[in-house]
Image (cartoon, rainbow, N blue to C red; front, top):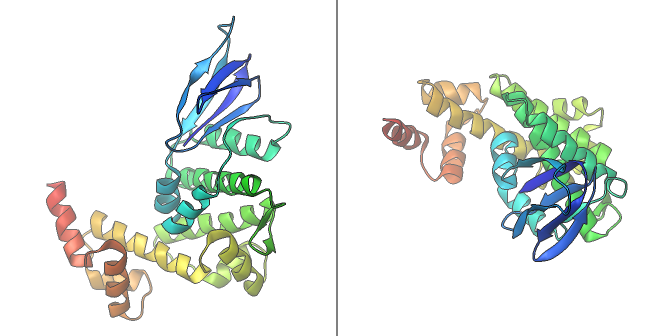
Length: 256
């Protein structure tokens, strides 16, 4: 997926064989695998664009451990792209601006922040595409709620990566929401329950520990707070198609 922001001047670009004009402060959004051509400017050499590109499925699942099927379904509902006026679409414009600016800073926590903005961008595009007045399913949501939920996900990712534990109650508290309402909003926005998301984050952390450390499987299970080791083995094998030991052995051989 490619996004851009026009910093100065005006001209035309080509998307899906359509000639689309642009001007200063407009943004460009190109969906994955969408045919497009570089910016073509008439009678000017002063056009300046800032661009950023990313794989929405990869960054959403790798950095925030979001459900891949949920992201794929979200992408399927996005039917608009091209040039957007910042006055008409201020939320899209601000998100594109934030993603481009924050991508200049290269650290893990900032990367998670960028990913939350990318997910918010996908949500906004899906909502505009649906023309459903900001509704997803039967529940009305707004960008403040999305921002709150994604901030809780960022907190989870940061905390677990530091080897600490995090719980659904703490996720709700970080959003200043009751746990029952938080669960409802979270499930609607993210596509799975907070508990399922936490489990996914713990398994992802276990994956990193297997690859980056020589900790024993029992120590890893203890660190990610799983009481029943068989549950860990079962869920890990289901998600990664290999047992933890086979996964570690395979990746050690590849690294050699």
